[in-house]
Length: 164
Image (tube, rainbow, N blue to C red; front, side):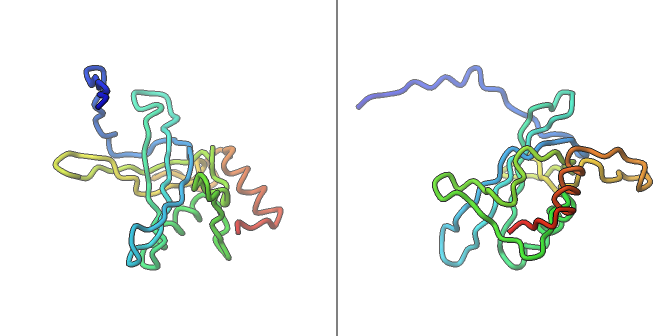
């Protein structure tokens, strides 16, 4: 039987990001089928930290469950990003399972991150996603600069196009 050597000596262990807000980009969203009939499908959102600093290019993940009891989380994030959630339909590629609509690949956003224990070690938890130009704590609405995310959302909202 053939063997493949695996060298872990160069593998870097990552410490979780500190609690806070980080500028990120939505890398991709994958539709995941349930593993059993009593479970619900979910969307696995992959994010990349874009701000300069020690965490630049780090990956974060958020799960949006399609369970009726958990949909409020996805709805909150999508509304925060400027997505029209009325009559929303998820369109995905059946070969890659990649979500095509709503098309959020490359979308800049702010991500609120906390830490939680998981299997004996601290990991990151993505709490919320918001448009990059949303006011931060202590900031007055209207003082923020318009970001590409806000411009993209406004253009889609103004054109009457809904995500279906």
